[in-house]
Amino acid sequence: MALFRKAKKEYDKALLPKHVAIIMDGNGRWAKKRSLPRIMGHRAGADALRRVSRFAGHMGIEYITVYAFSTENWKRSDEEVSGLMSLLLDYLKNAEKELGGDEVRIRVIGDPARFSDEIQQQIKRVEAVTKDNKAVTVTLALNYGGRDELVHAVKAIAKEVQDGKTDPDSIDEKTVSRHLYTYDMPDPDLVIRTSGELRLSNYLLWQTSYSELYFTDTLWPDFDEKEFTKAIDAYLSRSRRFGGR
Ligand code: IPE
Ligand code: IPE
Ligand code: MG
Image 1 (cartoon, rainbow, N blue to C red):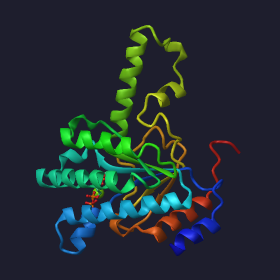
Image 2: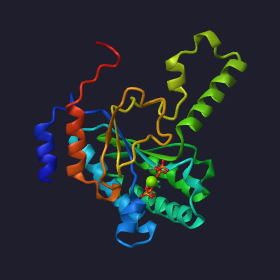
Image 3: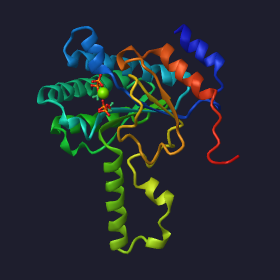
């Protein structure tokens, strides 16, 4: 709590990033260091997500978008994928119970079709229950891939052209943005990736064109309020030019 107060006192909301995107990486290595099964690392990762979402909301950040499961993560062992699916269901059920009266709105981006019916229903429920919460929107990227998202957008635009609803010459950057899963949110100002990997791994490819990038060796389950504050401080020290002088 002391940190929340400190954060509120020290940061001018106008300068804070409006949207922070996070690649929550390193759960497996966190578990390995402790000789635990990988799923325990994912469980600790879900706890870290709950902590960081609340903290970001108190700090005044409006959008947090977290990479929770990529279109490539299906390549993992059946055991790990099914463990992740049951953790995901627990997380969503818990969020429905706990966040209904809280200030966190939950949203999902990605293609849910490959998830079980139960998970798909639960996604709809938690989105509905939290839809009026205003402090912070926590978007979970689930079965999300930046290229997959662009393919979806291109197909939707092509269909509109075919149906005579869109003139090809009128297609511009806004048309593409409007057809992405993130159509109703600002582009991320800051992308944080934990665990020391220096890549985007197919995350928000279109939206991160001018995002500031922050990499830390800290493994995701160890990422806490202090680490988050460090990332925000690094962001505040950057000079964003967007190609101008
Ligand atoms: C990130 O942690 C969580 C998911 C990708 C679901 P990892 O599972 O990738 O952890 P490492 O990279 O193996 O340590
Ligand atoms: C990116 O992490 C995806 C998520 C955090 C959900 P990965 O661990 O899957 O990425 P790579 O394989 O190291 O690029
Ligand atoms: Mg990883």
